[in-house]
Length: 155
Image (cartoon, rainbow, N blue to C red):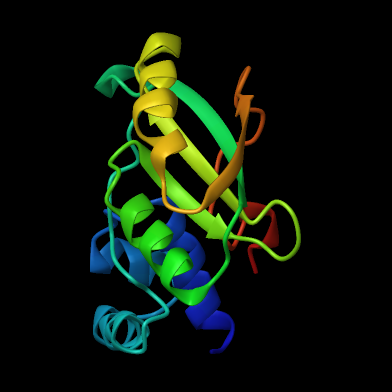
């Protein structure tokens, strides 16, 4: 991946709806080579897809909680079942397995505190192998996800 590929990626992270012509202009290429580079980045898996960034509150998921999970059992079957089950919970918008304690970090988006309490009580506490859940309720977003190639790194 060269400097031009990185510029393409920065521009697409900033605005995934850019036309190929506009993208080519921004990175200093003509449209055909720019499109070839974008397709190569897609085919190699560097670009995994495109999506809209939504306002959580506007779609009824503005209450954000981070939940750390400590597992009671860490055998292969329990971990596999836990991860499969977590992946099926729509309110869990992100999940990561961690080294050490805690074992997992979940990002959860729901409508409000009452919805979170129901999810925690009815779903999260019943996940396979869980010993402990700790909720960290977000007060505000200080720095939202801006992608992997921040604007300040433009070249």
